[in-house]
Length: 62
Image (tube, rainbow, N blue to C red; front, side, top):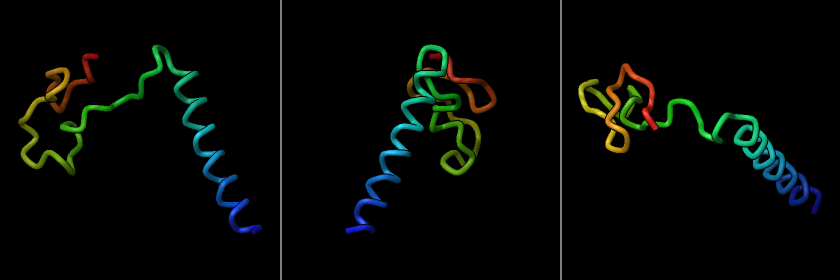
């Protein structure tokens, strides 16, 4: 029972942290959210973001 409560407490702390980060950020957006800008997902570094059209060396335009 203690393990379940501990796990639920850690999950609640994580969700609270994310909520505070969204609340504290201007317009509630995370920095660097274009997945195509990730070097792990974009091997050739040439494709643009399918959402906003930003190149890998640019910030997200949304």
